[in-house]
Length: 351
Image 1 (cartoon, one colour):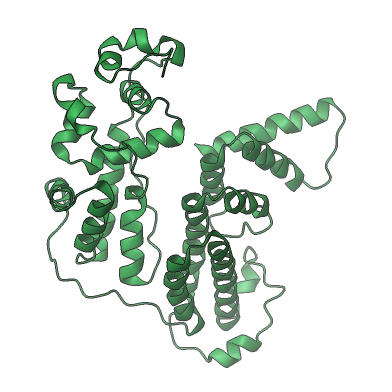
Image 2 (tube, rainbow, N blue to C red):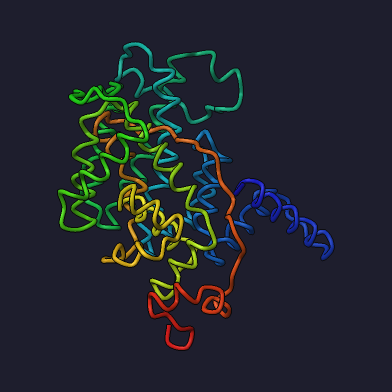
């Protein structure tokens, strides 16, 4: 979706330039213009999605510096990680596809890959040169990622990604940590893991640590299944009524805030999920005993997978669900949802 939106804006800008007799010799300038416009408009998540959809080889180095600067300057740590993890994942996939045997590392270091063109068939005639390029290409991305992490003060993540870097240097594909829990993760086990983690914790953040500990004992395939179920539940919560609930409870809720709200709803367990999904007024009020935001749950399985395997998890795709119900505005929120407003003591006059 972000891919088509971005290209629509590029085409619209091209039309505008043509009408105003503005010519850009380099077509990249049109892309750069829309990129800068999206950054200015705060469409950061969409822009990251477009990059990861459009540059699925990870070759976006010339395009992303302004976005990187924005993310680091504004301390958007989660989004910075999402951007670079996606890029690194693409590059590592290519590297491990080609590095399927032992290579002389010193020999690889001496190979000139400066004119390697990943989009020209003849560049792949020499397998050794291909591996040399993919290795250098992957290390370059990892080093840029680590530099940004250091600026953001993410020392723990630096240490974790350093282990991936070391594997790339010696061309040793990481081996998964031992799996001690042989169960298959389905809907029932998904909710059981959520509930067990919640019951053993005093707050939502401790529950994340408990859940992380539990997931680490599963096979990587099952960790991906957990993420797929999580994202499926996440999509089920796409409702204007639920966005209204989040807005009323938090006295305001933007796009990102609603995403973090949906993650929190899932973290409360199956019973709470169903009560909030159906807006059961008799049951939902006691559930809001903490700030209903839990962004980190969205990335927890990815982190566990990476810690377990030393590799970056491939994207998990689920069917996107459109927003259900009727759209509202802040001005009519109180009149559209009088019971919710009364339950959570919301008024547009006092917020």
